[in-house]
Length: 333
Image (cartoon, rainbow, N blue to C red; front, side):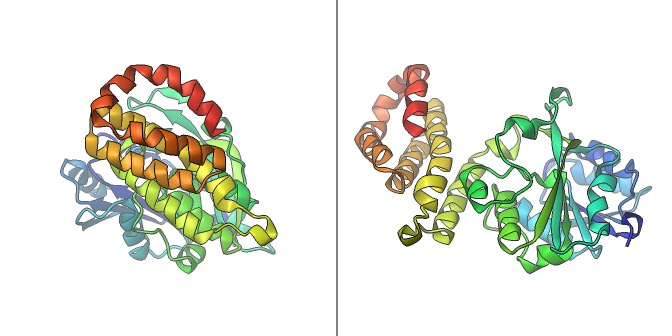
């Protein structure tokens, strides 16, 4: 089967994306290897995004689905369920593909292989809200290893297999159950880790084939993401317990150190916002992660938590952050 004969369904979750959705869709229309299906799932938008999609659908083959707001995992799953093509392409509403994105990523699916291919993915260029270039080949700067070949590397850091940069086998996606709808952040890490664990192969193209837009309204910076991060951490802890008999300490040596810097950051942001509820939650999360860590982290966090929980003191902690960051980085190494 040639890549030209492969059917590709493009799935785009839409939530209040009026500022970006037309640019995203027009990048789909320009593909040198055309998609056979384009499915946009309106996840309860309150802006004009769906109207923009309807206008474009008058002259392009777009299917617009609607659902109450359930998050992008549910939106993607719904879009996949309502499409039929054997290859799934994911695109976020604020991202953009270069013209050869589908053609380059589809190529490996047309070649015989001894291990079933689960997904292909590429590097990305980072842009800001206005579309200005921030970084070429941004995945080169993350420290994450590509392609995915080792479980320890998948657990020790964020995978950086970004949905916008991937094509997936529908058979593989269905076999592992699609996106976990309890996650509204890290759902991509979770999906691709399950695909890896199920034995599917992956192929990485180091060339940037699209643009990843990062801005203050991105889901990556939301409180919902923070909650989902802890949900995902607990899922990993349950799925990969320490195994002292084999000297495998997935939780202590990989998972806890991976998430601890994020939790320190969440505490700092909660203090900055003066949100006492978030401060309490951040302290609980820090306590949980520290108890899973090596002894040095455990006793340092245990000593600090009673102070960190004093709301009246938090406004005085904020000016000290610049001084404390080097100490925190040294402790958390």
